[in-house]
Image 1 (cartoon, rainbow, N blue to C red):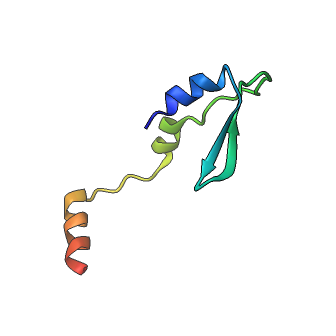
Image 2: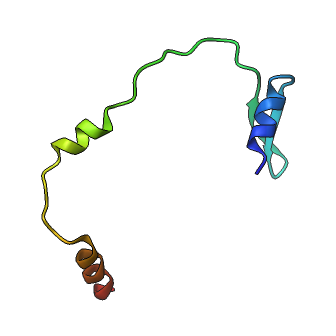
Length: 67
């Protein structure tokens, strides 16, 4: 619920994340570098998919009727 608060707090101090009293992770200020790479072109991938001329509402209705 307050993720942003804890992320900002981790810039100032080392935080330990616990689950039912057990340490499971830590948050600390990041001082290194990360390799940046472009995200895949989702639109180009979608354009490669075959076109299917089916009414999606009909498919959903049929699927629900089978249950």
